[in-house]
Length: 167
Image (tube, rainbow, N blue to C red; front, top):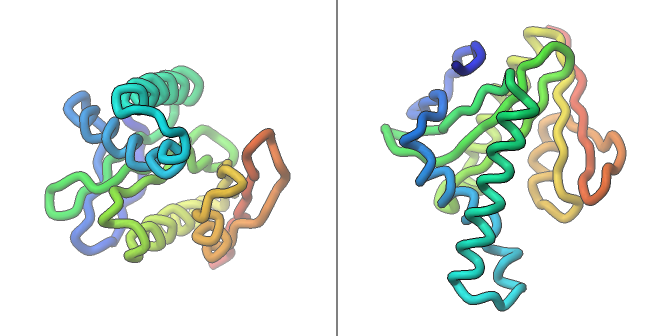
């Protein structure tokens, strides 16, 4: 069962809990986020596919085992899945675990609107939002535009934090 999440007001977009039937889409989405780095490996397709399958499985299991209060959400546009948003809703900080969109939806404003929904949620509840992002990930610009600041380095990741804004 997915935790309660607040409603959103993003026209044409639906957020719903992940179901078993979403896993083929989620695997393909994960793969699309890894393709740029995999292009540098020179690996054949079967190796790339096996690597992504294994990494997706391990990530999904880790998130579900260690963050039981996470809202695992599929982002749909006009009934078609176009992304995922995972937010750990445990007491304390909201933790943005993952936000990913299919390539056709990237850099078109949907990520900004999803971040607006998450930041409004945190502001209403007076909660910080934290996230970890790879140091070379261009998504850091999206996070900075939405009020996140560098909160330290943990291994290959930059920890970012956004304090709640008062109404």
